[in-house]
Length: 465
Image 1 (cartoon, rainbow, N blue to C red):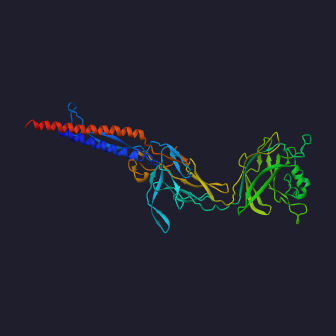
Image 2: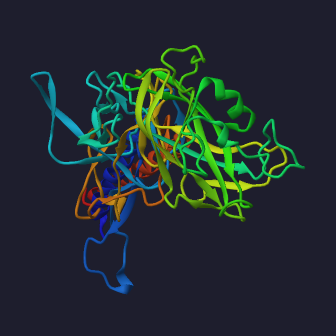
Image 3: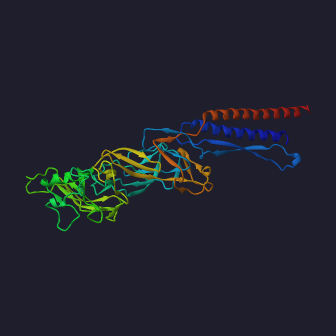
């Protein structure tokens, strides 16, 4: 290597340090950019000519960018429910909008990928981040739970229509000996409902209890039964209807094949013996629930049973399914003789407006409505790459797939989504300042090489003067 080559090498050093400073300045400029991944600089030596082991000399230098897309940034909590951050590897799938035609947005084809999760609804309800990219996923109809579209996620703010109650999920333990008014430890069978005392006891239908309880028979039912599930149901118009029930034991193992219970519900709360025409006050749900000596339900064999044509205080709800599941109903001894309820809920609701949204760690976007319901609105797409650092950076915090990154692989794969948060830039200002000082010194040192080479060439020229 001669003096002229040293000049060329110093120039390559100046270019490399300038390139490094360019990356440092970009990192500092984006230190507050949501989801930004800093770009580091790698330096490699370049051999200018063929060398032998005894004549190896330092060559010039090249500078290349090194991405840090796999390095996690810290999280900032926000007050926006649709903001989200990825804890782990992965990227949100986004599209960019090309135009608005007839008031409807159109989107460019081809997916892009980002870590920028500051998504919020635009005027049309589409979730868009601060870089103008629209989140992709599956939009769900909250009323039906069915998929309504695939593509850019749209959160509807339309009024949620009322849903009538069609099923009740219920699990409980019924006491072996119910604490009824007439029960007596010294009188076997006193815990049973005396079905013979009811006018609506179907002949030959024992052990099932009376099909209906008239107002003048109500005290007999109340004295020989215990409280069952009580909850609010909803009619087709969304009107609330109060359901009150009672459990009555109508047979036991000493007289039959097992302990048998019936469920009654209050059908006409204002009915009296003077009501014309006479109407029943309590209705039997119509099923014998039979338990064996071990307290397990043996009949019915199914995990649910229908309650036909439910009408409460004039509000017709139609048939309702009572779902208790496998092992949901048991009969064990209890100290207080009361029902121990484990699960009690129903699937209906009144109409409501959207109050807030939140994102679950599995990527489900849910909405909370004014009627108290929380329903799924969408599921977002998250993808992984075999080599995330092989992605091509795009403007506005987006990345594009390349041959080096490999194809996008759909799924979280251990990554969780943190709702109400955004990922900060992974730029460390102190670290960038340190690198900037080193870069400045290296740049100055290269200029010193150039000035020294200039002095040497000047000395060589002065020899012949």
